[in-house]
Length: 437
Image (cartoon, rainbow, N blue to C red; front, side, top):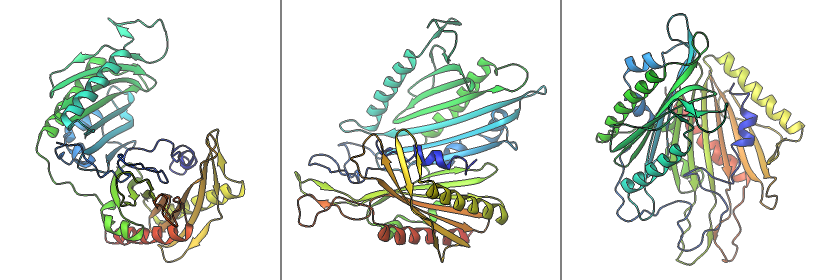
């Protein structure tokens, strides 16, 4: 499955037209009065937010309750994510899924439970005021999608997802729930505002045999139980948050020494399914000193480290070889394309001194809807390390930038001779961390 989605990720995940929060956009000029891509400015009066990790959020749900809702099984797994935190923004999420859960009476079903929390502030509003505004805006949006009242469709349609009326709940500072029936079965979602935190809990699924859907009342009650526990957790004082292994084996200083200041992150995503995976994402962006009124450009981009534990050296070697053949095939046929993007690949290059064996590939993505924009360049280093594969990727610019109009100023661009040794250095640090465990 991991290898099979690689092409889709390359086509869909690399479109830089709308960068994700905190990831920045290389080669974009910044004018006076606007924060730089490094995002150093803070709204006046903003209070520091407590730290929270995906692992802490997972731990808020007791094992007994979690097993009753999404029992551990061969087909189940947990995913946790922690967004790259700043003083004014915190995000974390945890989810469990089971595609073949025994729900009793010989019935097998799909069950999914997900939790997410987020807090942030915006210019002119502190985190609590911002949460109040976002909560109310979301509530109105959820009210607009209601198309079932008193058990009957009111939108004149006989197909498509059905959304029930909002039910007010006694949780946190404000809360409500909404149920829906759609392609993934019956689902209940609970939305809570607790101080600066926006909390969302989603639970539901469908049955592969027996009745078509789980009980609506039971689904609502289950989502409510989890929401109450998470709300209580977010009302507590912050505990220590440690960057989990293996992301914690690479420090911000190491990233900055390999590339350039300043690095933010990492955002961490882990999965403990049958194949364990961890993804660490850093935003690497140069700070450009400038006076008010001066325009500048900043080199930078996104550093992504992905570790997959295949369970055996043989399985890892097979996957590594499959990836190598994939890139050779992409290069031979002239790249990949859809109606929005075209990606071209340079020939794969062997890399020595990393793991059992390694290779590097440079690619460029052209936006077909804006062919005047330069290609977005990326370098990937793939490493075989025992029973694991490691993929390190940097997407962005490495050279140029600075104050516009100065002698020698050049718009930021990607230089492979700079990117490859920098990425190799970070990959080597990660491999050292893997050896120590």
